[in-house]
Structure formats: structure tokens, C-alpha cells
Length: 335
Image (cartoon, rainbow, N blue to C red; front, side):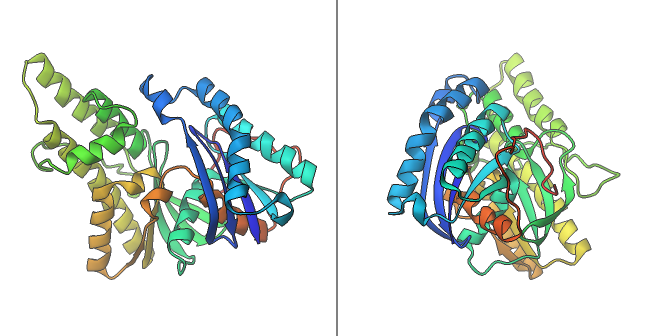
């Protein structure tokens, strides 16, 4: 079954054609990063307008590169939550119009579920159940994936997401948006133990995260040095901060795996492209005898191929919608 997928939850307008949830026939992404970089982050109103301009040519190109027409498509999957509401509405309304005009089934697809599904493309043998660490600019979750459409949150952030902490720390150091990517590159040349940073713990919830205090600690470190006229080694600050964030993520993730007796571990989301996180979990899983899966770096960021992958399993489970489908800025992955 070939699914046409549409993604517009933030600042990437994307469309893809995916066959049977695993094979990508085409994947097109129109990025707005360069424009939002001027403002140091995503401006929702601009993002919505750019989606409206880009969505038709992006969908056309996805069909063209797959060498297909709409008559070859079996269903239309679209991200409907969570995300920037104006941006989501562009994709949802376009998909609704396309489904109405063609008579094709409309499949509402959760953005975080789609990130998890990116692993089905990169790892053909992967099947639930497994434990997944979903880390991005807006989310940090530990999710038990019991089946393709049945998921349970085991742990989550109480404040900032890991990706948000990376971006804000990078911005404090004068790095351009998206800062987390640049911070990761600079950290490769630094000493991760040059600066001692806290490892926040949520005492009443051992699998939950808290990155606000850690983010504040590194920002205070930078500001205090600046006020004293001291120059910090940027690579060392980046490496120390990255090490602290990854330490928090991996500690809780591995604890959950041990306590739940799960031996398949998966990562997903934009921060799953982080070099240290990938290396650390690969090493730790090998040490403890866990099977470890991660998406290709090209599938870590927002894209429509992952929406087509998850959309296929949502369709098989009977999850379809009609023309009253709405978009939601927040929605639990558990639904």
C-alpha cells in the first residue's frame, strides 16, 4: 500500500510517498531554517505563511519523484498534532481537501509517533514491543511501544525538553539557530569534564527528566565569566553541557529498561542525531546485551517519510478521519 504523507508541524514543509510503512519512494522537505535564523528561532506566523506557499509544489514533487499519480495512492496521512497550530492547520486542511477531492482515506498521524516510526524505515527488522527515548526541541519522553499504535509514557520532562536546553545554551554562546546542531559539532573538540554541571533528578518519578536547572547552570556559568571579563573555552563548555544532558537521558532510559525488563531500545526525534547520545547508547546497550536501534541522521529531523511509515500502521488499525479533522497544538502520544 502506498501512502502520501504530509508534515507541517513546525518549520519544515514535507511530503513523501511510503510503501507498506517501510519503503520510501520519495521524500521532499522544504526547510525554512535560513529565514528563521534571522530571528534566532521559529516565528509561528512566518512558518504558517511559508507552509501555505510551499505545500502544493512539495506534494507535487513527492508524487513526481515517486513516479506516481494520486490514482496510485491508497491513503493520505497527515500530521495533526502536536506542533504549532497555524502550521499544523496548513497541512491538515490541504490533506482534507485532497482526501475529499480524491475519495482517499484520511489518516491523522501523531508527530511523536511518526518520529518513532522513522526507525521502521532505517531498521527493517524492528518490531514492537520496545522502549523508545523520544528527544527533540519540544519533547523528551521515554515511551513503551507495546504495539505499532499502542504506546505508554514511562517518563517525560517536567520542564524544558533536551533539544530546547541545547538550543538555549547554544544561543547564549552566540551560536546561530538551530543551535543544538552547532553545539554538538563544537563539543566534539572539547573536554566533557572541564566544567562540573548538575544532574537534576525528579525524586518522585525516577524516569522523568528536568533540564531547566541544568540549562540555567550553564547560562549562569557563561554570564558570570562574561561579567568578570573571563574568556571560557567554548568547546569545553559545549562538551561539558552536552555530556551532562546525555548523562541524564541515558541514565533514566537505561534504568527504565532494566526495571521493565525490556531488551529492545530505540531512540527517535531531532536530538537522536546528537553524536554523543548515539555513541553512548550504542556502547551501553552493547555492554548490557540490549538490541539498540536508531534512525539514520537524515530521518531524525522533521520529515514526511516518518509520517507515511506511522500512517500505514494507523490505517491498518482503523484510525481514519473525515472532513471535521482538526489540528491540536498539544496531544499525548498515548491518545
